[in-house]
Image (cartoon, rainbow, N blue to C red; front, side):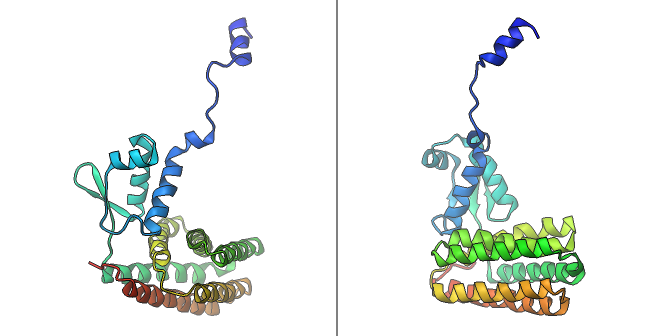
Length: 239
């Protein structure tokens, strides 16, 4: 090792900035996602990079990266040459999202029930429990993220990468609509969350594909009815 190399190692010129700055776009994404989920960025809101940069106190680059990710997930869409707008769904589009999501999950359960290892099912149970505890604390956003993770684990039974890549944007898009309505009593949401997830998990643990498929279909249909009712009650502006 030369003297110059040794000096560089002992006395670095630039200090490390840490992971937070390296993954700044992830922090911006989380902030924008939560604002969309909580309804602070309502459907139809135009997102201007300069305004967001000023509010978040960051440069335009991580905001642009975060918006591209949100666009790939269907939560915002391009508006003009440089802007984005928060997506507003029609009733038909909402119904179609649930139909495709249900097809993905039923396929994964039907064809992948044999892939339900003890460790995977335990992870499902742990994730569902974490989501329930977040919901019990009143943290709907954190509970929604755990619910998203739970359903991704169900789809992972299919061991099909194309299915997983198709499902993820559907899943997150639906989760945003589940959190926004505040009309449904929290106690009712907790009951549905705990009992329905627990029944699905036990059917998968028992490798009972028929029961798991039936329970999953009932679960998704029930969510769809409750979300649609809540959105109607809170005057969500369907296109």
